[in-house]
Image 1 (cartoon, rainbow, N blue to C red):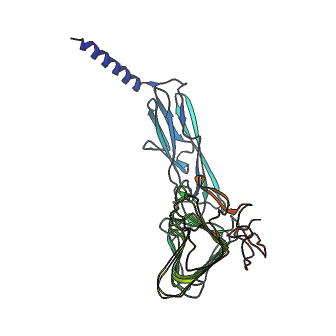
Image 2: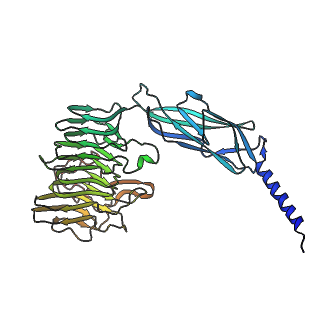
Image 3: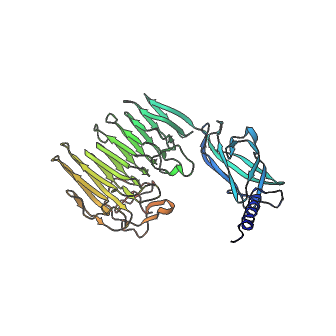
Length: 459
């Protein structure tokens, strides 16, 4: 019989040594802690609205534990920042323990008070971590922005909004029948997740084709990664009662459905000029038995691009509809879908346009037509470049460039960087027919004779 007792004693002694080592804490000044970041940034935070939590992780790579004497905000209780260390709120947390090869979390938020400045401003503070006579600092900074906050706002007469301060819309923005909301160049509307824009009257967005002077419609979450999420807000809805809408140099981002219009009335119900609709979760532009005129329109990387349903009267000149899968939206539907039914007539013209999606993707027909009923139907494609397995029928088509890559300037889906301007070798150059459109989406001039296809003119 083998001696079991000595083996058992050795095992118990070994476990005891390990347990003691695990619970042992070093007081050496040479024991070091490291942090996941040296500086924690907060992107634009609207005043009076708290941020989401940022995270700093403290690592102990030593085999022995380290006692942290203090984690504190240098600005103390007066700081706009707040910390919480492993469930314990600040501004100072004392006597923390980090076991060997372990870590703990510091959660950081910031709430900025209103100030008198119209421009974005920066607030700063720092976190001090003290242990064994050592100190380590993590810098904190946040971009702040004053704003005008409106909750469930109704426009009942004529209102003009300007670019002095951005507007943050909570619950909903409604433009009543007969009322008009005018937006001047550079006006920015940040919509909360539950806040659609519902237009029964008239919306006039008079932007200019520069990044700083476009009229912006987007969600109110500006922190990474939420600022790039589709479906961050519902979108803009033009009801059957709405009339006389014009969006010039507008940028509509990250909606569930970018622009939705329904019902007839004096045509066109909506005019879109030099406008971008990007990263909508569902349709970028959805029209149901309505009327619309668009020039230099870009609809990009939406769940569905342009969708026309029922009857209606539509004109698209120098427009680009493009779809590429990325980290948020999978390109599974055509960039142009036309689905008609009923007894009312349907008329649509697409001139000097591009309809394209990613190569080797799911979608092989980027233009899809579904027609039923016997109503008058007139569909014309005049000088277009598209990816189609079969040209839509019935339709009048002239000068189509089939299944030839338009060679956009830059498409980098992994980095979510897209420029739908045309490269110098693009087959879309000089392939358009003359129109009355004298500039492109960037406000750059178009030639009188042979313009390029799509929303951008190669300069």
